[in-house]
Image 1 (cartoon, rainbow, N blue to C red):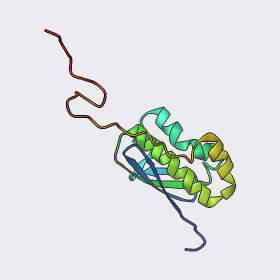
Image 2 (image 1 turned 180 degrees about the horizontal axis):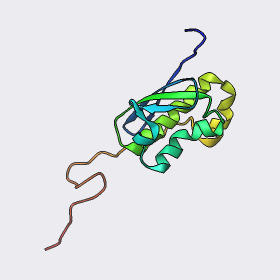
Image 3 (image 1 turned 90 degrees about the vertical axis):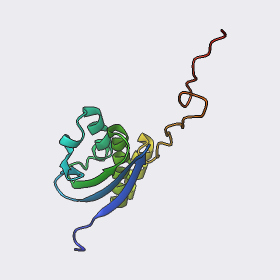
Image 4 (image 1 turned 135 degrees about the vertical axis):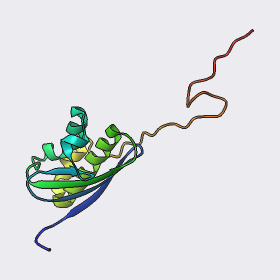
Length: 131
């Protein structure tokens, strides 16, 4: 088992969590036991998730198996991107500069703002009339 290295990493965005397992292989990506193309229907989500593999030209060198939970598909794609980038750093530390330049290592801190009492939503107010 020592000859086959497995690299584990975690990525988060909004409410989504991606647990990523990277191992040497042919470039197969499986998410929650589903093929990559069947899980991410939108092309933009697929492109976002594969950016770290594309920029390091290691898409055909590793198999990616990921467990995604929480949030929506776009948030999960962002979480997967961060998880893959962190796993690739464990493979080769020289990728750090490329990832940092492209912003793949920074966790997106934006979260949904909570609804406030006395209001319809986070920012929206109830309609006011003078009468």
